[in-house]
Image (cartoon, rainbow, N blue to C red; front, side, top):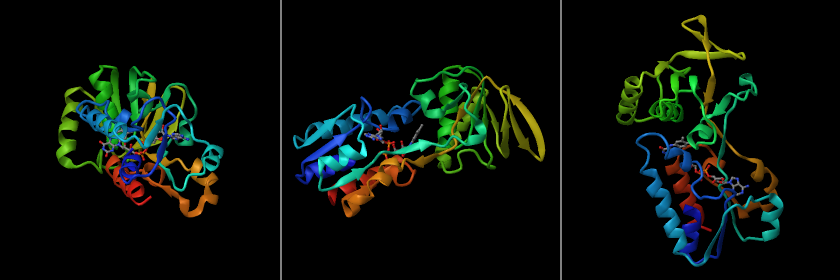
Length: 249
Ligand SMILES: Cc1cc2nc3c(=O)[nH]c(=O)nc-3n(C[C@H](O)[C@H](O)[C@H](O)COP(=O)(O)OP(=O)(O)OC[C@H]3O[C@@H](n4cnc5c(N)ncnc54)[C@H](O)[C@@H]3O)c2cc1C
């Protein structure tokens, strides 16, 4: 969205393809946890700016394939297709093992004994969302010594308070070793522990979605990859890269 706005303001003819029915990408999930509602006004502000640019054509429900992109013949292709959640193989493919974004977007539900695998910022926020909705007995499992290690302390302290007030159990220094149909086996302080679960909500980071990039190498310098599609970081980095790519197109 930032790329399209910046390129549009420079007078270029811009086409934005979005495979979903709404603009906003992962920020649509980011707005869902308690206290994150203001992100919605950011998405609305970007949509408004796009709508004021007659030379920017926004096409929703359009999945860009390599063939579509190559046959369109654009002078510049800005690839901002985001990332995909990490789902380590050892978790297996069980119906009750669900990526955090599916929960936040309301596409899937979890209840009963819920284990949140991964206590980074997204895991913590997902646990807050579940606790706020009184979805069950929630435990967050994090391998590192600190939960939400990359989150600023001034933000994390009230998040932790919220979780403790809602009786969410926080298990740091805890490594997931194995998953069976009924239990998550973890290692804590050198000892193995069985944690029974009804649902496991997975929040173990994101990796760039490189599927389109790999098929578009023939575009050479015409192709710019930005945001989470280049390296999964955060919305501010994606916005800044997006602006630069659009402005310099
Ligand atoms: C729960 C959660 C909370 C977060 N909280 C924060 C936060 O507080 N602060 C912060 O800075 N960041 C936060 N982030 C991270 C932030 O949302 C992402 O870093 C940012 O959205 C990345 O932007 P992007 O445009 O690169 O990719 P995305 O937002 O992933 O957007 C990619 C878009 O491309 C579309 N797409 C993919 N493939 C195709 C295709 N073939 N054709 C057409 N369209 C396609 C997708 O549908 C999507 O709309 C959070 C993320 C999550 C999941």
